[in-house]
Image (cartoon, rainbow, N blue to C red; front, side):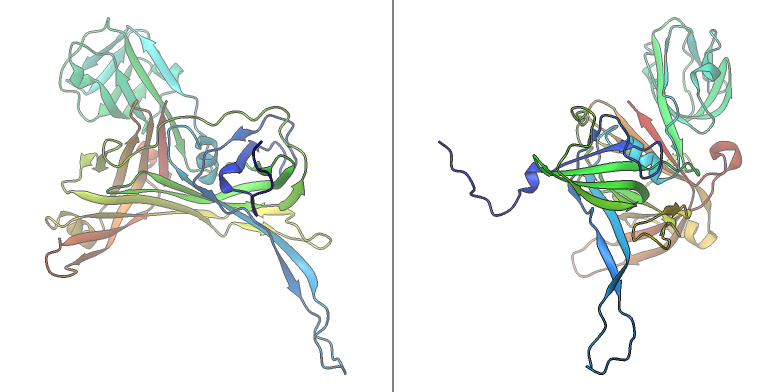
Length: 395
């Protein structure tokens, strides 16, 4: 018979985090909750207390009173394809569009104008948008026409793309085009989180709204993500919030820094340097919980404004990026992150400016490195719709 009552605390390996999107802010949705993969979490609660400033002949402070209860939260996770899409989209105020999923034999490729052409006129109906990245597969006449392309123009029977199409390829092959895009916006989507600590020990977080996040990767590591949340409240419970068994978390492979991170592009061209680290960070500055008389918990949320920054570290080779800093050159910067099955993301700064390069020699027998800051700004109205950040997903 195994030994019981041996542990002084609940093991983190027993913790289960799950969530569901809310239809009404702060109200428990009657749905199955989605289990989530994570490296760590920081959902908690704290109270602000104040003391009346009374004159007291006994020489002691007045009793403290609760004036506010705050419930911030955070998730740290290893990025795998599709696992955190709903949360990522909400954290930039956007929504992933309906997935493009064309599988037809009516598509040809033309090198003369860098276009894919569809005699079935299905591009607009499929939902392909200007600025979106698409994944093309199935061409056998020239495999150079397979891969990732950014859409420059869209018509029912023609899309033009970059990078350039090098070889003509006739229709008739089983060609697939896939992709799904999310850009920052003003959509407010909150979630209801549940932290299960044991069979009848739960903490619930209503009105949970992601206010920022990050995605970064370096040599010898994997793509790491973070998300920050503001919550309406924290409440304990002894009952499961989900209406049925939790939906299983996706099981995709974590994206690594060797085969997973590809095509770090500046203005559509690969950066001519050996990159050691790249990252993107976004935050809704001014986002806030709103409080009112009569309750210590939040009564609403203020959206704030999205600010996007990043970093890039490379071996110093020449002054190409430094010259961009001097000239304050602006343009898109993106990096691709894929798992072993080709599923994953392209993260894009729609209009990035290289700032504050640190080109330093740290000591003897070391490599000279260039550590650069990335400033994100609203991008081209034509290509990016005036948005600051774009996340493309490939399932």
